[in-house]
Amino acid sequence: MSESIFVTVPEHVAIIMDGNGRWAKQRGLPRTMGHRKGVEAVRETVRAAGAAGIKYLTLFAFSPRRTGAGQKPRSPICSACSRLSSGATSPSSTAKTCGSR
Image 1 (cartoon, rainbow, N blue to C red):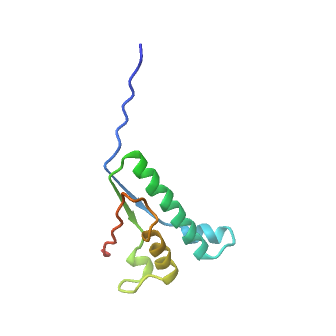
Image 2 (image 1 turned 90 degrees about the vertical axis):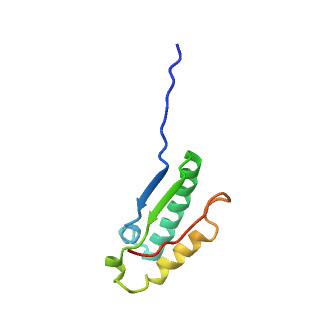
């Protein structure tokens, strides 16, 4: 007798991205390398989420507490996010940038 296995895939997954700078520092690398590796990890996560059938993927990347409320985030982080949103996903995905809370 064959057994059916049902897997429920969530419609929405949210991820808090943190620690890329610390990851690089622990390896003796510049913080910007940590941000680049973070972008690579996000690209893979977006691809995997799409392949799994997840409709919505929310990535929390900045905290006003960490960047200074009312200040612009540091440019290496911004350039990493810019690289990500300029073609890092797939033809069927849409990247939206929302404001801060």
